[in-house]
Length: 223
Image (cartoon, rainbow, N blue to C red):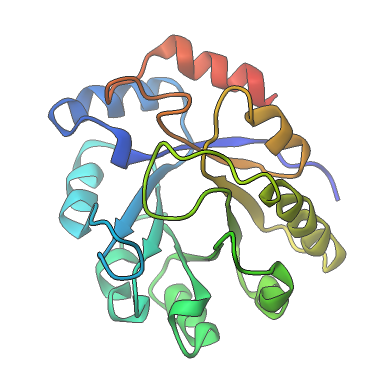
């Protein structure tokens, strides 16, 4: 399969909320493709982060579509809150629900693009049956829940395996990498098959803000 162009999905949990319009303006000027929204409920992961009110605030400021990552228990309970945003992609962790296929179908019914997120501890082969149903597979290369963690090295091979499995079934789904997407790690992640990269404090964000120079640098590295 033809190699897909790499795209940037900045992690909005790393943005300074007091400078949100400035950050979003920089992303628009830099042609950023996605805005990564981490939603955490304090149950699936020991942290609380962004919610639908934040998404509504972002949607008022920009037309960049949201890449919503539900790190929550029973994500099916919250789909109505997150799927209606224009162009949204909504990913969830399949182990958090009893009927993941139904969740995937419901995300599509609500007008969003479905994706699954793969925890570092979860073998990709256990989710192989879901790959033909989604538009994105997010490989976590750190334990979900917090920014600033170190890369778990064996997860790079999961990126390769994911790309191989998708190519084998003729899927055009994106492979997203989330976790310690640093200047040092980005080339290896792209080489392993990632074409959507979640950019956080390891690269784009400095004290909650971004610069056009770092966006340009990110573009050069992923290409």
